[in-house]
Image (tube, rainbow, N blue to C red; front, side, top):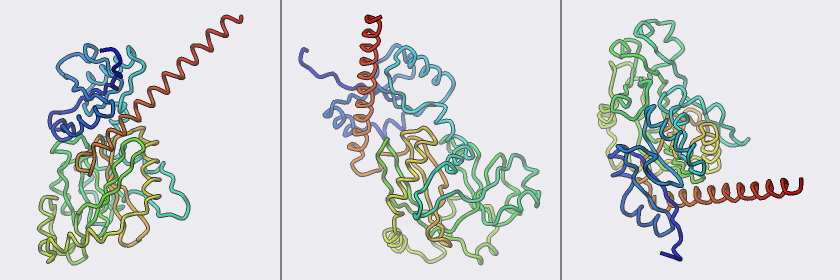
Length: 334
């Protein structure tokens, strides 16, 4: 119909579970009211047969999918891919995931950030080697090396002594447990948008528990430790609400630094405050394309993100047009 304004077409390629949680009717309707059309990518059909898309957001893996994205980008150079598969891949390994933290620059005078002391365990022999483990202070958290979102990648254990390592199956990462007051800060990033929220975390571990516990203890059992310590649900909620958020400028430094170092636009990261050093924080995990729908008014946040992509594409198109005009003028003057 003449006079209609073209919508900014965003294709989304997500697992079915992710579609149900993220692409809710409220998001579709709000985005469309602002000129953004969300279109489900049919993963059973070649990507080239669909669209055309102005942008594609995705959370799929595999060589075939990466090749389809690359080929589509070649045939449609104006499309914006969010995000590059090779950048996302860094978050599928718990070592490469946190390497970016070293590149984060924090403004002078603010809090400091880093990662807990950790060790990559490649084989079972390392677990029984006291010298290899000597660099760690117990308790430690045992995490699978692969972080691909599967149930297996979420199987984590709290280990209280070297004997508790015997039942673990490498490869894995052993990360020193840092007491952090039972509160974790989740920082959501969507382009330039940054939001920090409080969440309940593992309770602090005290020396008497270290001496009495025999591991490993799965994370699913840790809630029993909190119950045994006499903390009621109401007390835990009160402690959570009273937990002071990290300084906003500090969170922004971390988020902006990670965005640049990782080359990602859609991610979140988990931060804990070291109770022994109140102004020092540890980044312990980074996730790609997290559960944005858990945030209040997430429809506004994501629609603004899509509109930012539209402005980016419009700016790139305008620059290309100016460059073409300049080239034509230069040629005509020769």
